[in-house]
Structure formats: C-alpha cells, structure tokens
Length: 304
Image 1 (cartoon, helix red, strand yellow):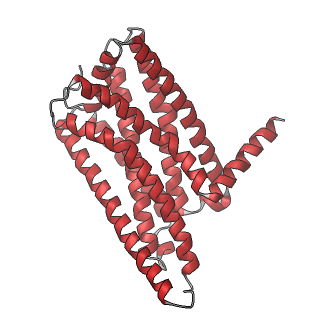
Image 2 (cartoon, one colour):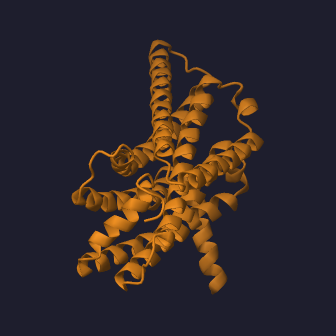
Image 3 (cartoon, rainbow, N blue to C red):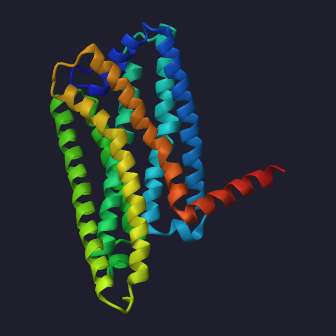
C-alpha cells in the first residue's frame, strides 16, 4: 500500500472496502445508497447555488457569499468526491482494483472538500460574531471583496493541506486534527459570545417600555444566527463521528476490523451533511426559498 500507515483515508478506503467487498449484498447496497446521495446532493446544491447567484439582492451579501462557498464545496462533494467513490466501489466489485492509486486520489479530494467545509463553516460563525460585536462597523469590516479573498484563501490552504497530507506523514495528520480542534473551539466560543449578547439584549427590551431603534435589526440578526446554528449543528452531527475515527487512525489506537466498518458508515454520515444543507437553506431562509422556487419555475417554463 502506497503512503504508509500515516495515510488515514487511504487505509480507510483500501482496507475497509476490501473487507466490505467480501459481502456482495453490502457492496451493492452501498453503491446504490451512494449513487442516490450523489445525485440528490448535486441537484440540490446546484439549485441553491444558481438561485443565489441569479438573485442580485442575494449574491451581494457577504454572508451569502460565504454560504455560496459552502454550497460549492457540497456541490463538488456530490459531483466529484462521490463519483470517485462510486467508481472505486465498482472497481472493487469487479475485482479490478489493483493498486491504491485511485483510492489515494479519492482520499485527497475527499480530505480537501472536508477541510473546505470545516473552514467555511468556521468563517460563517466568525462572520456572525463580527455582525453582532461590530454592529455599526460590520459593513466596513466585512466587505464583499474581503469575503471573496477569504474564500480563495480557504480553498488554497485546503488544497495545499491535502497535497501535503497525501505524503502519508503521520505528524501532519495530527496537526490537521489540532487545526480541526481549533476550528471547533472557535465555533463554540463565537456561539457562546453571541448567545450572551442576545440574552443581554432581550433583558434590556423587557426593562424598557420603548422599543430600541435597533430592535428590528437585532430580530433579523437573531433569525440569521438561528439559521447558522442549524448549519453548524448538522455539520457537527454529521462530521464528529468521522473525525473521531480519523483520530483513532492518526494516533494508532489499535483500529480493528469493526473500526473499519464503522468508518464507512461514518463516512456516509459525513456525506449526508452535503445533502441536508440545501434543504436547511430552503426551509429556514425565506429569500433563498423564493429564489429557488423562481429558478425551478423558469427552468420548467423554458422547456415548454
């Protein structure tokens, strides 16, 4: 196996799929599930992305630009990462997988997109933190240009990290886990601070008879923050099990065959995050939901 023991996802792919391939029924079921998830994920995220970019009022918002970055990574997960994984499963099923070159390529792509998603979700949390702590100066600090630059940096750093990770260096894998921990801590810190400000603001409203001038803005922010919380919670629920498995492999905590089996299940759970996100956007955001409806109407009308 190329890359050595340090290449976590390569081991997860090569070894766990080889175990799973012994059961034809499991392989077929897995392929069907991944095909369905891939198609739905690609279609949903493409709809949301086209809807946001097609609306002049939505695409200029720095928050929505960050959201587009997350949607794009989810779209690439459905189109590229999942397609590679399905192809990989077909090769295993047909006994045509002779090396770990293709699994390694898939592992690099998968790792790259997971890092992009993690960093983008962290950036969304920080954006909401800036919105409430720099309320009057927010539009000066968080501009469309700066957000675009931040997204480019996120994709660039994730790409460099994935290439470095492909060398199979255990130390680098451990560094990435530390970075992941820092991102999770940053999310928790921003949630806590924003919640404290919102509670204090709510207490001030109850103490005052007159409605504060910025109450409407605060209510709008509260809705935006609630939507962000949903995004973050789904991300954590879907990704934490997979990150736990990655921790086991990074620090060589005696993974067993059962660990490989759980790794494949948790990998599918991580992919479900890309499937659930577009549904969440359309459910929680009235503007995005209307834009998506208009996009669908235009699509069907153009075919008639």
